[in-house]
Length: 159
Image (cartoon, rainbow, N blue to C red; front, side, top):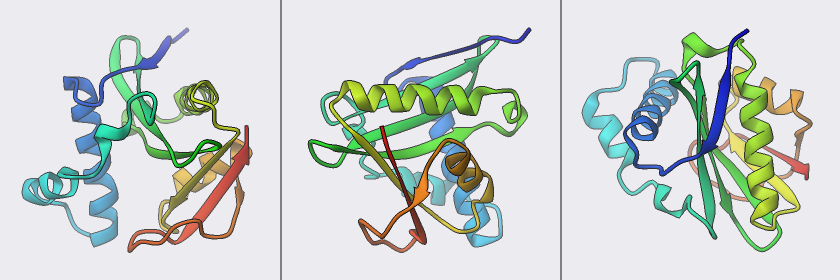
């Protein structure tokens, strides 16, 4: 039996920082259809607003599989009733081991704790694994609630 532990953690802890870098590397590399450079990753993470992922404006969580940092995700309060799901990532070696569902559950619980009654998110069409995860956990397609260069589809769920 494998063990997952998930808990809120500072976004700038060594494990959280490494997971955030890997998340950005994966999504940027897939978008550009080539490996992202260290400089591009640094630039993408600079000023990305992660400092808002602390109560009362949000939360960041890290998941560990048998003690190894394996997953992360964040929520950002958009207003008094809506939280945005962001930076959901599982290291490839840990996918398919049940952590994604646990991560989603904890992020939704944290959103409820902060007062959200609805979770929303945006993503790209090419991030099939993420989109599959969201739909599997009850998220449905919604109209756009924001705009940006990497936003192609929006999802929402009543908590």
